[in-house]
Image (cartoon, rainbow, N blue to C red; front, side):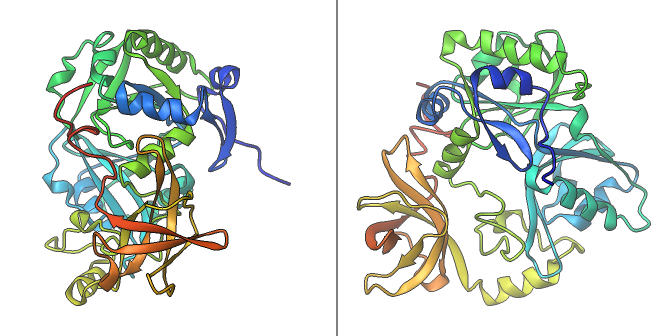
Length: 381
């Protein structure tokens, strides 16, 4: 018998206006008005996502920093209070258990936000590795709602209902705040490539969703002047792929190391010790045999996960792990893995779409021009 689908605090709101889908065991919005419209709203204006399905775990205690530096690859000692960093957890072989963002709330208190599909696995892994260290681990996932407000007009939208000067919160920095008279924790982070915030609504359990619903509606009202749209998982996926961000289970997994995935910047081998360090140090010394690449179609067709990659002599050389139609670029884009010797920008490859080989080129990430789009854009639209 199939397990009953899980729901977020916003389920009753979503089902009135969204097309729902099952993702990681949750009934979630796939789309509202449409994937392309929602995608372009985020790239050009502002969009809001319900991401309450993700896992949220707090780690506190005298050994919290020491413990986290053992179970993750990045160095949390570099974090000051109210700051965040991207990281991964690896197994002993260097394979990625999950990727996530770590937030330092206080000197001895951290929070990790996991992928929804890995909530139980990640929690169990962390608990398993606490050993005798003085840490307290709490799964607060069902008691904290979480929204992402993303796009070049995200700050203006939220400033209209915020008690905090949001312009002073830098990228990967955080701050407690009040939005529409609701206590929240805000982080200038996201999964779209755009500027924006991820908002944690404290004390909003599934059984009492009122605060979460109130804030969701308040943000939509505040964003009307800026063209805000509620966005579903469809646009979330196309946005992250345009930005070149990995999706766990597709682009990275326990058979992929962060060095192969182009995530070496989160591997701090100078740390005293962490799970997977020996394997990753050995791979770095030798050089990874394969690398993640970005593929942009120059021929017709939309690439998808699992499609095979070929060289110009029609010899199979790799496989895509993600693929879609880019609403911004109006062409097919994808990511996958190739032997390191072939993973060079400008290399021409072919993607097997149905029974034909379609032309494509390896390009740099993000797929879009970062001076025109994304958090590094030179001027606001």
